[in-house]
Image 1 (cartoon, rainbow, N blue to C red):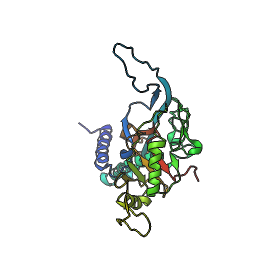
Image 2 (image 1 turned 45 degrees about the horizontal axis):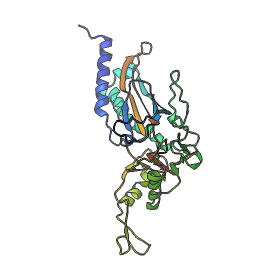
Image 3 (image 1 turned 135 degrees about the vertical axis):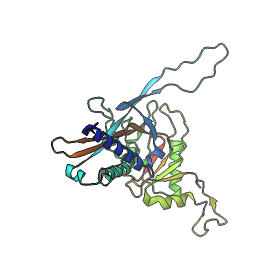
Image 4 (image 1 turned 180 degrees about the vertical axis):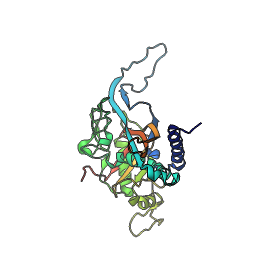
Length: 330
């Protein structure tokens, strides 16, 4: 039985799929350490936070329950974006070249770039999170399907990292909260940010005290050595003449307390973040890379495309704090 052209393109497509996954690695992808991953089969997710369920109330024997009426909170939206890449080669070039030196090497390169693309995309949540005008990476609008009412901001209509002038509101109390400052990376400032997160900002939408436990400091490559030195400095000299470990030195309260994550795709050389990993940032995976191969009937070009869909959203600002990243695009 003769090999049909459709069989050829199908076999070629399968070869490219195999090459893609053989060359795909996740080495160096930082976003997986900071985002909670969620697979979905829809173009967006919509959540409604509920308020009104306070602490449990002591109930006496044969006494009725104390009832709370849940109150509607913030609507939280997240959507996926489409990403892809296509390539085309003339039929003559394809016929005169070896397969692995043509399509194969191109697909292998795309596989290596796939996770880098995702890492760069997710890094935008930190790079652009303090922009007072917002940023489109936070906009969950799906054209023709749903409109994000907060546009380029997170669910409460504020930047992810809001300073005192644009502080996060509380739905059921008069408190406002800031999780952005312009502090340099020092032990003294780490303590200030830690206190702001664990004391000043540790309240829920009802004004109830909650527990925030930051465990990670995220820095660009420019601050890597400085961050590691601070976390591995066991003693702090009381003055310039004492020296580390001297008689009047005190123990560093943050000695090896935080995990240091270096994210090469952060764009502010002196920007740094304190984060509680696993809280507040959600990565959405809608479609893994799909490879398609076809022949253009008019030009006889051999063409291939790689297509995938993913996205992200923030569902809590309380578990992160940013310093020194820009509030306006230069």
